[in-house]
Length: 186
Image (cartoon, rainbow, N blue to C red; front, side):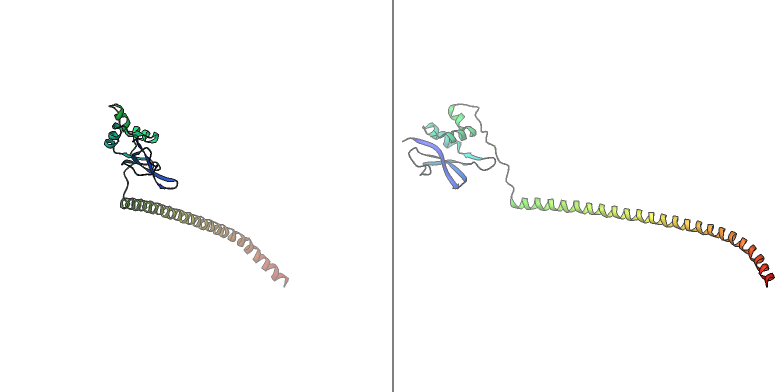
């Protein structure tokens, strides 16, 4: 019996995942396996490759032939190098980062929301202070303009008063003379 180490496909259309299995070479692709020795999820980033090294080495030692894809997976995990006698063979499989629990995700989201609210509050406070400062500056400008207008009005009033007595004085001088002429005419 020719024993093969190959992949057994699972999953739905366009979303496959595989089990690394040891089966009779004449069996169907998804037929009954002698033993399942690992899993392979190619769509995850990075791909998930988990192979039981001890069992893989056993089956390789008794003559099981890996398929091309399984040979590449065994090379990545370092099992093929160990089988061939390479003492420095090691796994080069990238390990995905630790999954964050749902509670931790919720807490992180809440923390970021609180930080965002605090930042917005600081911005609104700064905007209010800037608006208040602008209003104060506008009030000061308005007061200065009012004082300048008052001063100019006083200056105009003084100038008008200075002109009024001067205008009244010649008119006063003319008035008695005009009165005298009017009296003579009568």
